[in-house]
Image 1 (cartoon, helix red, strand yellow):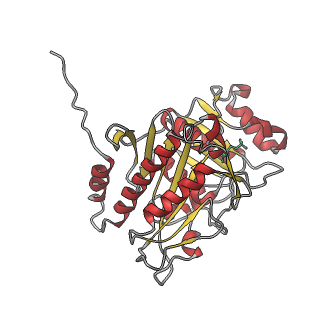
Image 2: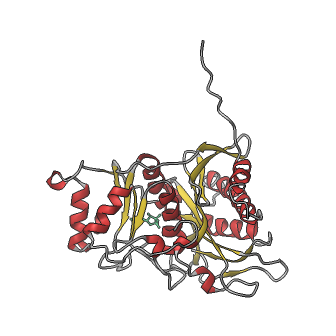
Image 3: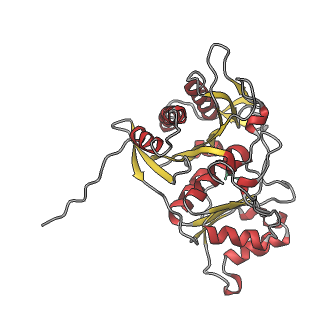
Length: 348
Ligand code: P6P
């Protein structure tokens, strides 16, 4: 007798509603933000999928706040997210990797109690060669008085996040998010136009097979970082040697390590003393997700989620993935910052 295992088909909207029920005090506003982000993700996925056909490839002649030539797709992705979320009345302001300052909610729309920070299309330099790219987002609760969001609302430690997630536009389009009740993955079924639950309660293995680091900076690293990378590679037999997998697209490298175990590292180096990756809309959201999956994230001195931000686009060294491998980074790099006592919001 063949036992058929029921595979329940659950859409992301249904799952968000179920998750909302875990928070008796929930008003549904955060759920609405997640619905809108899922819609934006589908729209961006359409653009990314057709990029090769619509002559959308190639850079615009504008430069973004990072001083990089903007790829047309990340300009589009930025617009899509802003337009999908600016009128729902749940946000008091937004911040984007593509915009120098915070993005106000237009006067004609009501403000809400949440802030959205995002990298609309991370890894966009890979677009022309069809390497997976991603969207990363972080949601904070407004802390200042008044209706409109201010910079202070954005500059909160990552442990104050109420939700975080990413979308990977790869061989399939997946959305992974957390609201502090575990990390859950949804795969887009293009024939339905729905994100379906495919990876409930993701757990990252405690130690990983893969090390994701760009070795071309080796000569720019300090000695402790060099020693750490040799440790990961099995020097002295201290651990099983890790295999290197480096796509050069943060979301792709992170996602593989989240599901299969591993460590992504972007250390500081002599040319970039704070590393390359951004704290508020790259490191913090991915750190929230990985901790919810049983992993960890540090900057070499301490927990990513405990860093008090000072600037919107500040960079941070990042070691993220399997907990034992991140703990090795903290101990070998002389992690000094003590863990924060007391409780924060979710993610604490
Ligand atoms: P590097 C892509 O440009 C990005 O911002 C991340 O997606 C990626 O992890 C990193 O930079 C790659 O940087 O210096 O190794 O090319």
